[in-house]
Length: 488
Image 1 (cartoon, helix red, strand yellow):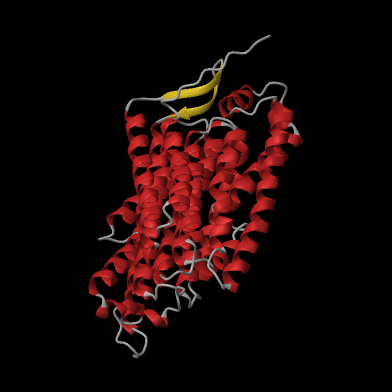
Image 2 (cartoon, rainbow, N blue to C red):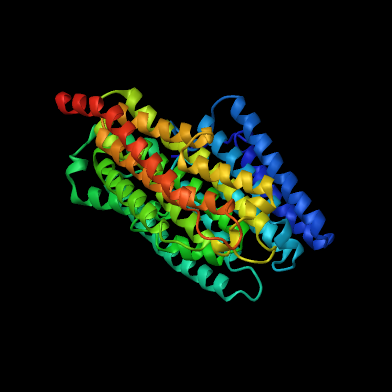
């Protein structure tokens, strides 16, 4: 029996643009052999990819590589958003890489080519409609980063970080593929929507099979590595600190966005929420708590940002963990949980990129992030950069005037309350208070007198804000918690 498969080249245009950028960068580097021309082509390609993704997304939903109703490529509004954000992050990291490339620490052609390849994986990832496309796209995003982490010449720390990242990532990918294979053995399909339909119908008691539980656990565990969720987080601080700072920025933003998109795709469309919900809720609590507690003890700037990134992953996972409680209640609660995770991720990666950009601007071109003491008084010497850094930190903490971070945290809390997960909303709020300590400490350090003692008023501010926020949390969530208990 012959199978006719449809192909829509318009839907594939963003992937063509991203992959074409990588090819053009290689050709320009080979033929022109000029660093400025190579970087320019890479930047124009990233901008063109973002524009193409936006235009195709504005034209409406499209699909291709379809057999019947099952499609391996689904270009929706979310796919367009992911592609645009990935392309813009790539463009931003290229801009941050200027001092590093001028210093001659890394080869320009290889650097731009690897970034373009990673961008291609991110663009494809948002449109993946089956597990095979999803895993291949995720690895296309991740594989170039192994090389980028260790690409700096003469850097032993970079080489160690690259090996650590590679070994742990390969194990995580193997676990994910094993889980996907077991899911195929159980259901006979790899398409996300068909998997979701099979579990929804529960034909033959799929949810009661031990093999199903093992398969779901393996897929979730493998993808949790990509977002640096506890206990799959140990690679992140060492890798971020050993990598060149622009690469660390890309790891903390684009790579994390890719992991969230992959996890969101399988949780929303394929895996049963009653199985994944409790697991993700537990991961969210552990991740945000461990990340915040360890970040309090950090003295190196990049490691502090890395551990704060781990904590932020917990906030992203929290709405997904509420899906088990939202399942069977209202479609609006489930949709709100997905939307909250996406919105928080987008705002987080933009603020995180701004924070890394400030560190790059304040540190030597070929140096690392240094210690917090190295940044003492930096805002006095560089008021604009220091002010932008402080604003990014305040946004990550979720305080005004960082409206983006405040909006993101409010969105998560509202989604949790709508999903009748008030206890998880309380944990998020308490961890947000805990995160104020190190974010405000770093912001205060930027304005401290060089060579002076630690800024004591910052501790007073942290305590005052913590008490005020805790009171607001208790007073604001208590009625909802009572309603949740009564509803049960």
